[in-house]
Length: 90
Image (tube, rainbow, N blue to C red):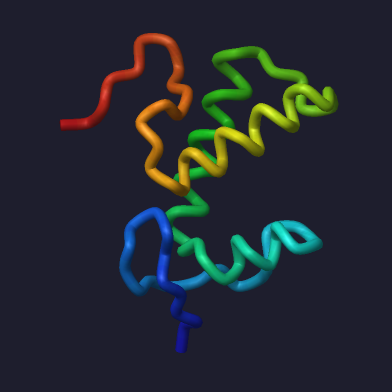
C-alpha cells in the first residue's frame, strides 16, 4: 500500500514520495507535503528550466533560483518561470 500525503500542489490526498528527496528539514517537509506526481512534474519542469536557461547547477545563484522556483511551483504561484515560448496545455 502506498503512503498517502495531502499534496500542497493539488490540495488533495495522493500517493506520497517513497523517501525524502534530499536530507534535512526541507527534504522532510517535501516528503510530508508533496505527492509523487507533483515531484515528478517538478523534476521535469526543473530540467526544462536548466536546459532552456542554460543554468549551471553548481553555482550558488542557480541553486537559490531553483529553490525559489520549486517553492513557487508547489504553491501554484502564477509567477513561476517558464521556458521561452511555453504555453499551457489546453
